Amino acid sequence: MKYFFILLFPLLAFSDVKTEGFIIQVNDRSVYVLSPERKNSLFSVIVENRSLSDQVGKFIVGSKILKFVSVASGKSEAVEIENKSQSPVVFVPVSPAFQEVPLLFGKKAYEIPSKE
Image (cartoon, rainbow, N blue to C red; front, side, top):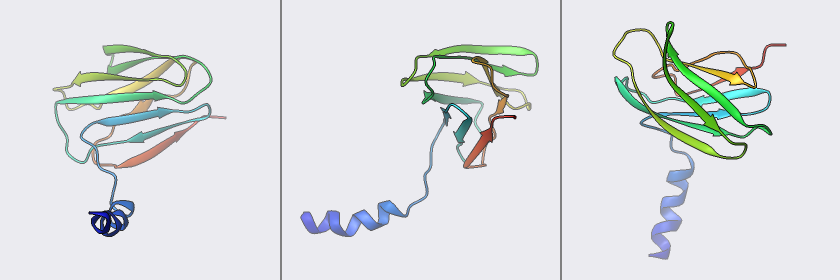
């Protein structure tokens, strides 16, 4: 059994990170997004607040508000989003304010830096 883990560990270390939903990591100066490969009309989003202040945000499609989320500093919150339209869902940090973060399927991982 010990040898099984020794052989398996290198395979896990170099494998691609895959997810079935979005993971949004909110930092003090940037937002990092990990996205799923396949598009679904119903998907989950985990918002991880790694900043020093509490985070309030909303998910929108066009001008329609889908959900609000409030995440304390150092915590995470999971929400389910249903989007049957062709427009992308956008995460908008409200407090503290930050630029909009589009949730793009199939892009794997991307970062949204703060506007200076």
